[in-house]
Amino acid sequence: MNPFRRSPFIIVATILVYFFLYAPIVGLVLYSFNASRTNVKFEGFIPAFSERVVMDGSLVKSSPCGLFHWYCDLAKNDDVLEAAGNTLKIAITATIISTIIGTMAALALQRYDFKLKPFSQVSLYIPIVIPEIVMGIGALTLFSQLFQFLNSTLNLSGDARLSLGIVTVTVSHIAFMIPFVTLVVQARLQGFDKSFEEAAMDLGANEWITFRRVTFPMILPGVLSGALLAFTLSLDDFVITFFTNGPGSTTLPIYVYGLLRRIITPQVNALSTAWILIVFIAVSLLQLLQNRTEKA
Amino acid sequence: MLQRLRENKSVQGTLLALPTTVWLFVLLIIPLLLTLIISFGRRSPDGNVIFTFTFDNYIRLLGYSTDCAGGQARCFDPLYATILWRSLVLAFNTTALVILMGYPLAYFIARAHPKKRNLYLFMVLIPLWTNFVIRVYAWMMLLRKEGGINIVLGWLAHLLGFPFQPLEMLYTPGAVLIGMVYEFLPFMILPIFTSLEKIDNSLYEAAADLGANAIRTFLRVTLPLSVPGVVAGTILVFIPVMGTFIVSDILGGRQVILVGNLIQRQFLDARDPTFGSAASLILMVMTLIVTYFYTRRFGFGEEIVAV
Image (cartoon, rainbow over all chains, first blue to last red):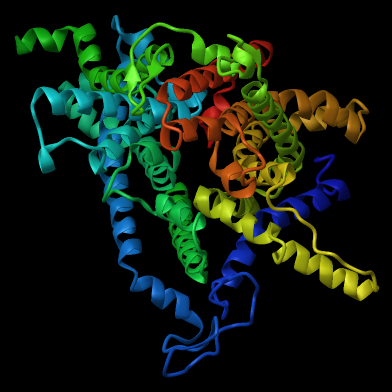
């Protein structure tokens, strides 16, 4: 009994909103095969299967990679590869650290009573209720004042001088990722039946064994989805990275932003398309995995 | 010692929560305090901070300039106040549009067959997981004079035999609004979906048995029960829109300057961190006030974790 299920209004609105969500993506993908190097107009597809790269004015007439000329260009672009490497390094490190200490905090907040508890709980909501740019410039101010102070008091010079880089980006990412991990794991712990743990204890397991054999496996799905959320937040982050990165720690979003302010070639579209494809595959795999575990 | 630790639950809890609490204190709370201190400071000629106690930055933001022609000490200069107001209005408009567009879709997904529900949700997640910067770029390509929208319109005009002049859409307030709506739409759809999905089917059956028609059922059953989702979505949309600067940077050019752009430029181009700090504190206070009154009126939904 669904009064609106077949309502034409809902169906039309749904189709329009999906169209709104996907039209820009389709355009983006299409232009990644653009023969025009300036990428202002769509000048047709790059002719497939040819030996040499021929640029006629601004048109690519042929390329060893055929239709995928811009993708080949991308794979040869060292800046892109470096940015991709940085992005992954930061995301992986930050995810591991934030998942571990975020899960610990979730356990503490859900299971224990301690003096700091209200403060810990409230501080988790800061990244949700405060615009990212405020955190970004806050972190920038902290690091620049701290580094200025340390560099002058310790008389550091040259390469030894402390400056913004991969470490400051990672540390700042962890700060905004922790609350998401903790809140997700906390939500999981709330629906947790304590009698399983009590049963384990009654059967003679000590606290560590109980945690390892009972508590942890039961909260694992929560921990994993928290980690996944944190990972994607880190991969996607622009604002915090923008203010805390330095020379040599450019991530992909920062790199793309830099390109947008200069000359745009279809390489940007190729990069975007590759990114969308990777995300699409990753999300599909996760969905499949989730469906499997739900059925099992 | 270890034995005592094992028995003392309070110490255990503190130790477990300590890394997180310290991390958040050092990287969120101390920076906020620093921002506050610096906002009362002054800029030195080489772009550094002189720690003093002056309200000049705030006075400038709220509409008075200390840099006047004719030797006056203070004169009216609404430039920055206009930027703050524009950002606030844009955030309200974006939120309203996103609710209008997101609600029907969330409703459709929640009422779809359970087997298809995951697929529909998945289709919302894909654009969301595509990078933020890439999504703005996609709209830049559509809105340009030679872009997708003008191509389609030109083609339609040609078919119908109308004369057609390409529209100037990029670098307008409308372009920024569309970009914001696109960026944040999924953040509204997911929490609304979560609250709609929880509604028990028997409630609809009861409403029907009692003779309520579709519209009445929607207004009296569905809508009230989905309020927590809308509230959570509003928080997830309104706050980031207030502070975002890429969308206006790329789609608004120099025409649409928001408070986010103002802050960014003070830290990078204009190099006046003290003024930038004051602007970002005003931004924070504005969002906190709106969020406070909004959540006090409607409550703070747990759907916030849905995304």
